[in-house]
Amino acid sequence: MFGPDDVERAGELVGAAWAAGAGGDWSVPAGTLTWSCHRTAAHAVDAALAPAFFLASRRRDGYPGWGVAEPGPDTPPAVLAEAIATVGRIVAAVVAAAPPGATAAIWRTPQVETRPAADFAPRSGLEIVLHGHDVCAGLGVGFAPPADLCARLRDHTRGWPHWSTPGWRPCPVTDDPWADLLAGSGRGRLRA
Image (cartoon, rainbow, N blue to C red; front, side, top):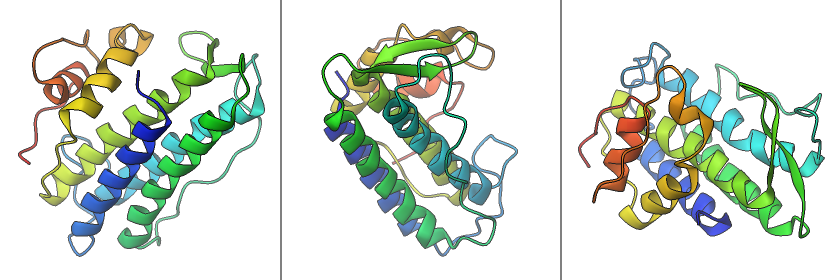
């Protein structure tokens, strides 16, 4: 199971990779995306933090009606790197602090679905590592999270509905869990 320690570790790994590329050109496309590295990183910070708000709200009928704004276009890359690492720690703390039996809406497409607290760390983890990869691909920074972390993330999320939506594919299971996550999300491997 992909848990609080894993999402914290993912945030630290991506933060370190982005910090290594902080002096690069963040206006270039993030990997195969049309968004720039900067725009993708700002989105990743927001999208990875959102599950903490979802779970903390305990709302079961949809997302909370409020949240925090994603970092703006003038946010320096070093701050984005710090932010993604911080997000991992925040999500880990919120998930770890949730009382037994806590549930909340985890997504609203294709319909609102509630899940237990244990599912919110991997919800954030996917945003962190996949968009972390996108930004690193655009910057030419090597990024390959450890196989054990990727295996837990792949195995925890494998039956989730996003693996059958446009742009995503059924997540394969091979002896390379990072390649499986990339293939399932329609991304190619970036050299480490």
